[in-house]
Image (cartoon, rainbow, N blue to C red; front, side):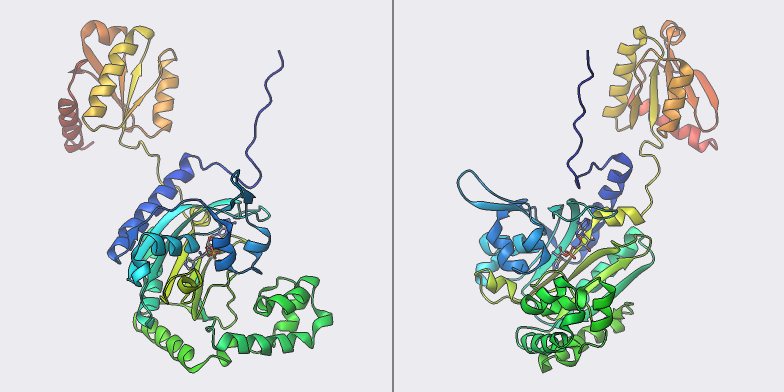
Length: 429
Ligand code: HAM
């Protein structure tokens, strides 16, 4: 008979297997601890939304909306999309069920999968995991500084080293349009030297001209006027205040006047965190203010700001923790007859809070001990004919490579087992 064909994962979608999964769990737990200390509450939002939500938030001319959404028409005719990011959804949730309708304050954080139909490469996937935090109803620069501080605290706590925090401002609805015209005029004079993409950007979204990866375009745009020189008085003041607060707290950042974010909803403060060792996809997080978005989505005028971190990329720069079952106990039934008593013992110990690895019977003692060792077990409990006949267990300390035969009965309780382990530890184990 022919073997059945294998079904592979869809391009750009991947499995997160235990070694990496443990890192994901750890970074999410750490986010929960730190974000809670900063007054954020968890939210869990749908992965499917009406496509309009994103088209109206991220910008019609953003790459995400133009070409990267997994959008389709549902059977009832509604056009829906897998969320490419969660800020727009958080605003919707804030308005629909949260205090948004009354323009109330809120701090939300979330973790979950996002979907973008980008070209897959190292660190860039079509489904990826984000951890994000959003603040609603705080207009002053202190909130910007607090958010960046939380991000810095978080990165330090999970142990990401060699990061660069790029900080800039993208102005607001008052100063940006005028700057856009200045930039368009500058680029129009160099039109012929720009790539086809940039010629389109020139018409549709000139700010993105500063974000082109083509060497020729970068060279042409290197001397372009800076938005930081065209800010309105209020935006300039806000940014100075944010920087002063961050400087006061000793947060290291690089002022980056050309910082361009790929999503259009930003206003004023914008930032990005880059990590070394990731190659081309080196942004582990980004965010900023988006004071106009709540209103653009039909709500009252509510200032807001936030950030999101890419968990896949964080996991690439963080080390996998030690084997999970370290300090655990392996129960090894040496033959089929020992399977029942071994299962009872494992269950008793587990119900008593022990971490137990139960090996299937029927392999050699050597193979079982090797498996227990590989999984990080500290002790192996052997149950074979001799043990069943004598009614006592053989316990092997896998680190000290020492056997303790006959010290505990086969029907040992979890408490007695724990006492014995403690005594071993105190005895200098
Ligand atoms: P973003 O910069 O588009 O911002 O994404 C944030 C992070 O998600 C990136 O820095 C990166 O680490 C990760 N990421 C993005 N695309 C991919 C991908 N294809 N594969 C792997 N990781 C990826 C946002 O999404 C905004 N919602 C952030 C925000 C929240 N702004 C205000 N509030």
